[in-house]
Length: 90
Image (cartoon, rainbow, N blue to C red):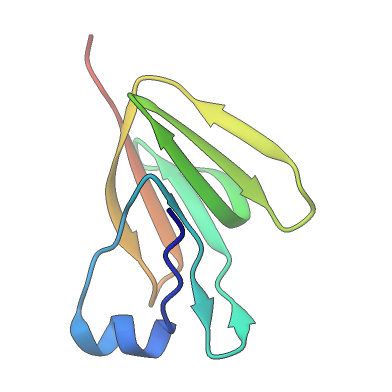
């Protein structure tokens, strides 16, 4: 499932959005997120996110992909372009 929402509308609604797969488009320009894992910036310019079980796969604007295992999305902030992940204690 794809979720396409104008960023301005998300900010107005104060929503935190995360779904299995999503893409956010900001009034005809793309939002590029910084991935923060356990307080550290680990990846930038992310435009695609896919969640499968406890794994999160992200892709940036040039197609580079990274997979983070045993994590959960705790926050998606369009205004600061942050996608925050936390490690799941196993």
